[in-house]
Length: 203
Image: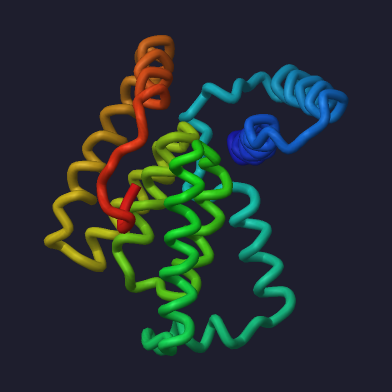
């Protein structure tokens, strides 16, 4: 039953992300809201129950399954060899920049997708994982954020930003379980801050 609840939570989280995207008509938004309420009632869960979160979002899991099913061997070859081509490196950087731009406009689900595509092309770049961790954090997926920080540190043990970000996510995850109202208030305040004027490498 625990796995069923996790699956239902991932579906609810996906639907919630679609609601936040701002790309749906009012009728479609209303339909999704009803669907979320029905799923929450049927499985006795809530979108705020982060203990059910998994490290990958539903679109990522779907993309991974589709990739395996269609036998996209080019990415698999570059991943296993650990040496992406110059073209792939350039494309990965472009995708990272797209992800950073989505973070600036608070389209966090899209940012996750761009960073994930960059990681597929160049899985040895610690910055991509750390950036995706930031996007996961904004979506409330603290477990995914912590896992990405751990991956970044595994690639670059001297990457201080990944350590700091991971500590913040672990604290947020604990606070979410103990005091969800407080952590939601903090997240709301963080989202209302003006965009940073830092460089384009990381959000």
